[in-house]
Length: 452
Image (cartoon, rainbow, N blue to C red; front, top):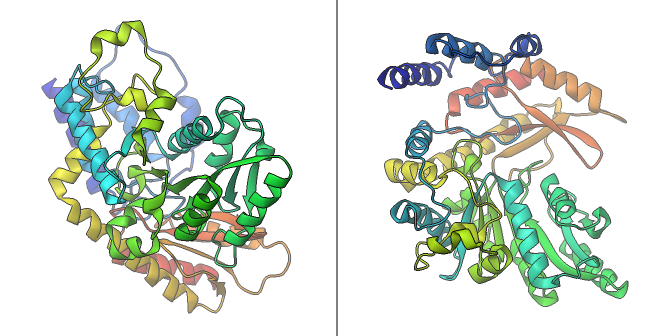
């Protein structure tokens, strides 16, 4: 055991220390390597050093999602302290989705979700669950709303989101049994925020047509550009129309720790459910999502089924049996990877890091806006800046994809692209805890040269 841990620790430390100079992406020969690595397992086992070498070889041929140059999609930094927490959790292998087998460890997870609920100003009767990510959180929220507002006859239920909503909402509707046609895509305004007047009209039209509006999603930071919907106005409309108000804050939610985030998220405290991804805004390993629910009783009513084999595990109610509030029964002890970093580093470290990301995004927007060759149409609400080549007419995909290829070819950064209202844009998303001013200055210069 000591040998395995020592060798693994050396691998991990060497990896982290090399991130500053490692290529942001190296996929040359990656598919060929993957093909070479096809195969099964030996009867007698293999030497650990040989296996580590295999892992190292496979790791090198990848996009470096843990590095400071990763500004694509939504970065997830992968805190080292969270990895240590996972190591401890997996070695202990305690079952915490029901409290009785490990009440004190379950309480640590309960502390995490209570902290999240308090962060968003939810009432004392609220509760959270940790999920594998935002997709599962969005699905759980939609199913809770379906059962609460529609019961078993839900074929006429309609749900609403802007044309900038994450694709997982449409997927959740399909999995939850709704025809895709029951998902109403509401036009966003020129700032790419949900148009509340258009939303109100769509609800009115659906009621007249015999449908039952029941669920509205507002974005607290879109994946495309980081735009924040008018949360307070959506909350008002949802209250008037008796709709379940869900806030998808998977990307942006933890900016709530900052003053700028709280200002931009005004109204989110009125949501019935909130999706969060600690593996984004808290820099934790992939596979760490969360759903917060204003009314824990509704969440329990939707998910609790029971089984005779579980009766002996019934506890006093606190800490909660999270399995009664979640689709999952068996899962890993996710809470420790959130609890340990918060305790070790302190909440202030996360707040300072997120404020830094907001500052860096404002810097990117300011500097790229000064480049004549670029069109940078939206000031960042959070930490995403979208841009494209200026002066193009017609289909601009090819030219902007060529620009993206020139930028990523430097191997000092890795950006991604998207489509917004028929145009092709590149994106800079600043969210890794390892991305600081020096790398952003370098990336700005790379973009300038590539655009020229």
